[in-house]
Image (cartoon, rainbow, N blue to C red; front, side):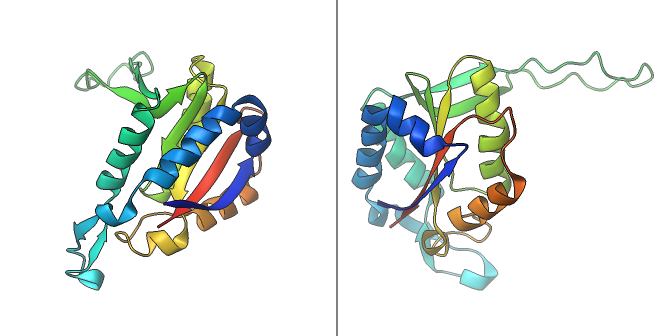
Length: 189
């Protein structure tokens, strides 16, 4: 795969290049090492693409895991203990699910990386919420979000979000004082 687009959310490119140039190189090497053709193995069951062979998000994620884990990157899981003290007195629900967690795909030396081939809401959540949470928990201080560009998303299931719409939304949203620097990389096959 290759990097086709770069967006520096909250000075993300500057922060990554200044503080993590070696880790950025590892990320770039991992992207280049992913053989996208080996991941084009998902037979579509969608009405508009019936029978078409598409890129599999699961297979692509596995390739990224293989490449980055080999370079010493690790995922981090944070256990979630959901509060119940805000329930109104007359409400008696089943207790919240045990074993819930939040996970960052890859972390190394306080640089967090998320690879997202899912719905739009997950991309926004990663940058606008999850990365801030993981910073507040002292796991990361800067992030990298890897997403498909439109040309790649066109060869995936419908509903997969892409770089161009993600950047438009971030541009219109603006930067908040709680946002961390995030380098957003748009990739293509």
